[in-house]
Image 1 (tube, rainbow, N blue to C red):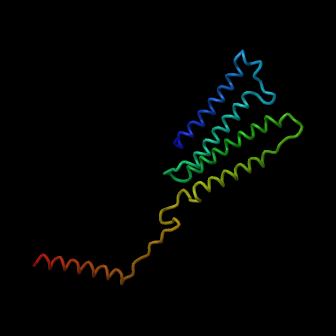
Image 2: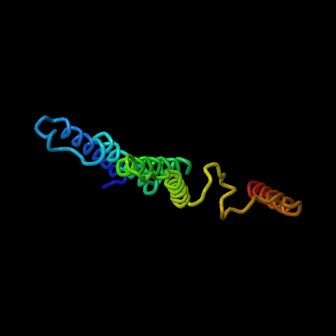
Image 3: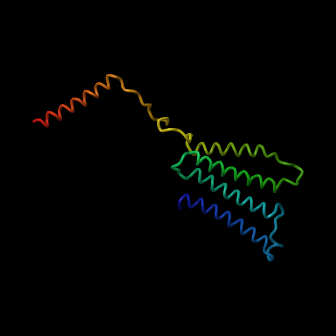
Length: 170
């Protein structure tokens, strides 16, 4: 299975799971038996979509090779981690809000941002998006030729021209 197809399948399956969950909660036959002890159906649909799409974008940024600038891979990874963070925050809301002990969200957000930047750095190999070819790791800077080298090249061209003239005269 191709890597782009995996991305599309994950996104489609997460939408399908969310739609089925919503449908089961609305149908009169299952509405009474299909309920959650914590959170609403909308919150659980949000968790499914956020985790599914977050996973899809993160895997796409890590696995798929791009011919474009590395910033696009980084943005996909960061967007994926942002969606995963939203999913975690929804889960935290479902299980802790309304209770006596609250949760501080800043450490969760800081860990998610740090992980996103680290994974995006590893995925693109630390390259900058605007790094030119002559600034890459193993390339040598162009050096100017000395006067002696320029004269040697000119002498070689003159000798070759003389040889071709002499050959045509014979």
